Length: 244
Ligand SMILES: NC(=O)c1ccc[n+]([C@@H]2O[C@H](COP(=O)([O-])OP(=O)(O)OC[C@H]3O[C@@H](n4cnc5c(N)ncnc54)[C@H](OP(=O)(O)O)[C@@H]3O)[C@@H](O)[C@H]2O)c1
Image (cartoon, rainbow, N blue to C red):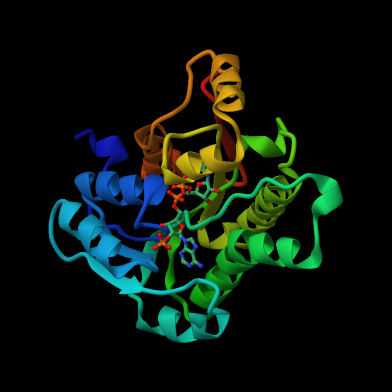
């Protein structure tokens, strides 16, 4: 493994580690030498992720990230972190005229409030080390919208704006904050999207992408870079992973 991208000696929290991008991140970051703390709601799948991690000293905790009131005690129980990957998220497809209050609340609570409040709790408990790196999962849809994607796109645009401000506020400690913005990646989230978006439309999307849909490793490799010291001069950025 190249020393440039090594995560040796770093402890990294990954949310959404029971599935898709978060799970792949956890596996790949452990292969690069990181000690992982992984979380998700589903204990069985969290244990499956734990079993796939390379090396030793990893930890996990089961949590619903909508339980904001537990964030202070969760932060208290964690070690000091050199990196955080906020991967837990949900998608949604709802034409603008059908959007109601509860729809806004549901998507904003997990995609925006959870990472924002968890980050605040970690900072207050001094659990983010100097020179650490925080990565948020945005989406290419903030730049290239799709029909019915207003809520999902808004939640991701909000986290992008937050991350840029965070990068300024934490720069004095050398803590970096960046987003990655993938296009379609083959995960259970996209499989689920297939229930509300027809296969024809999904195929049309894939044909529009010169390199086709991505794999979870295409995202985890970019996140690995952002967590490593190789990206020590990169903050406030948003890396688009669009397949062209
Ligand atoms: N896949 C794509 O095409 C794509 C593209 C752009 C951006 N993204 C973003 O990438 C991130 C990961 O997506 P993915 O495709 O890997 O999704 P996924 O396979 O559906 O995984 C979603 C993860 O979020 C967790 N989660 C959901 N609700 C939660 C809650 N209330 N509390 C705690 N954890 C919760 C799930 O945990 P449990 O299973 O344990 O409930 C699961 O680990 C998301 O933020 C998504 O918006 C994905």
